[in-house]
Length: 144
Image 1 (tube, helix red, strand yellow):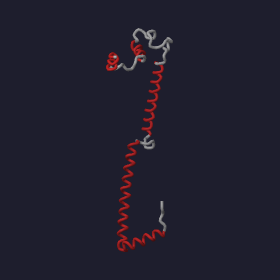
Image 2: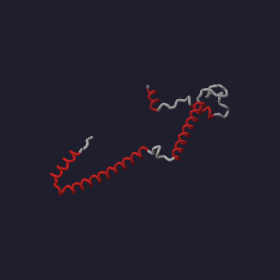
Image 3: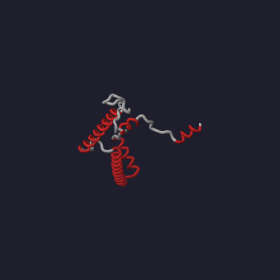
Image 4: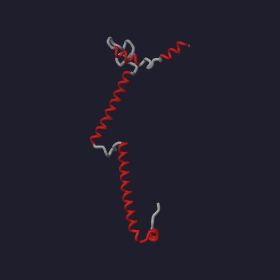
């Protein structure tokens, strides 16, 4: 920004002597010193408060986490990926369109065995519409 050299400091000291006199200069220096200490104290309190709040908002960083926490977090992520992959494979296998054993399309009577009501219901549910018309919509259609 700007810097003070020797000449600038000398001018400031001379002006201070002329304004306050030699008796008041030590008292003025003590007051400025107290103000500076108080200011630095409150500044450090504010910095500490802000960093604490930011840490709470962001959560622990990689460096702040212990080895056990990192292992647990990685294990949870691995489990989630494995479950998602298994669900995708199950969905792909059940919704592929053909039965793996008979080669016939799923959802037909030929693919369901004599007690396979659950399999038939699951295959048929994919073909049903997901929402039924509301009562108000059917009334409006009847009026027209």
